[in-house]
Image (cartoon, rainbow, N blue to C red; front, side, top):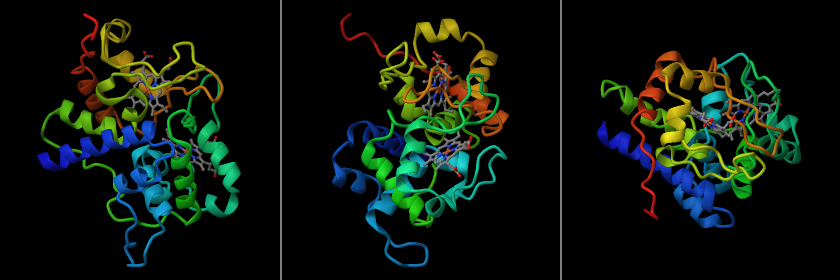
Length: 252
Ligand code: HEC
Ligand code: HEC
């Protein structure tokens, strides 16, 4: 079990690193994502489709849209099984980059803005996967959530599984660019300023549930996770966030 946990976290961090540094490095993306592999039925999968299946898991698409985009998570989140035929690649790219259904006051889940977070090449692979009909690809599975090791351990893997790590960085250290937002980057979830502003569990859970719309795309906002992340998992995420410490200042 411990090994599964470590792999889960390692895979998430790797995924994060690829998301941020993978622009233009096709080979790295495919190799790290597991490369091409046979489908469950044994037919070979196009490498873009295989990479797309892994990216679909890494960026939590599966957590909202369901395994292989089959839906069933929340009535507010559609299945994606028909979009590859219904929508053009240009439209799919626009939706992934810019999000969909945001409002100034989100009261239900909306499609997050991913343009600043997922590389253009990875979006290309996601589109290939959607257009191929979201086939099963070996090892493109969400990390196993550890049980009976305490809430903080569970939360650390949920932090990867729900893609928090993609936007808030490993260990909540922040620094992911969000150039048009007032802060210029997605905020850290560790450190003094965060702890002062979010000094109760209720305040942290509230922002995870409701999200926040800080501007129109391409500004990245905090997704609305209400109705998607169950209460016990919200508690575990908070237990994990409370273990985080900011990196020591390299200048002193
Ligand atoms: C926080 C939940 C959430 C996550 C994570 C998420 N989506 Fe969505 N997505 C939504 C919601 C909600 C909608 C419907 C928006 C609307 O129509 O108002 C949507 C809509 C879409 C659509 C348009 C579907 C249609 O029929 O018009 C596509 C395509 C899509 N998402 C792809 C993705 C991909 C690819 C990812 C991962 C990079 C992803 N989504 C991650 C919530 C999410
Ligand atoms: C698509 C990127 C994205 C994802 C995924 C994401 N967040 Fe956020 N989150 C943001 C942005 C942007 C903000 C800043 C919102 C603002 O300033 O109003 C934020 C704010 C927050 C805050 C409040 C911190 C502050 O200083 O405002 C918390 C707590 C938080 N997120 C937790 C999480 C957790 C837990 C997850 C995973 C379940 C998660 N986030 C997933 C983008 C994201």
